View 1 (cartoon, helix red, strand yellow):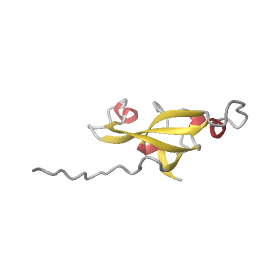
View 2 (cartoon, one colour; view 1 turned 120 degrees about the vertical axis):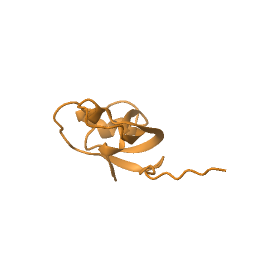
View 3 (cartoon, one colour; view 1 turned 90 degrees about the horizontal axis):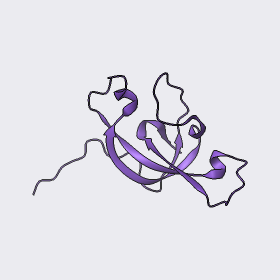
View 4 (spheres, helix red, strand yellow; view 1 turned 60 degrees about the vertical axis):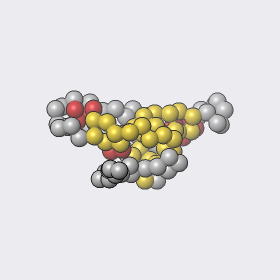
Length: 101
């Protein structure tokens, strides 16, 4: 039986509360500005993928980052939201944009 050891375990688990980093990189980025600084919850680990932000500039060299589905309450994203309190927004976000909350 072969056992593999993950040398880069996922930094977040389903149910963890996270905050999206507030950064304004020059060039290509995948996190909408309206979600930066907002707090959400990890609802799914999507696996590891090549970071397209670095890949678009040829800087990645095949490195992969953890990718997550993060859920946000609509009122967290838009404080004046008039819909149901249970309404959420889910966005896929790479680990380099997430902070422990």
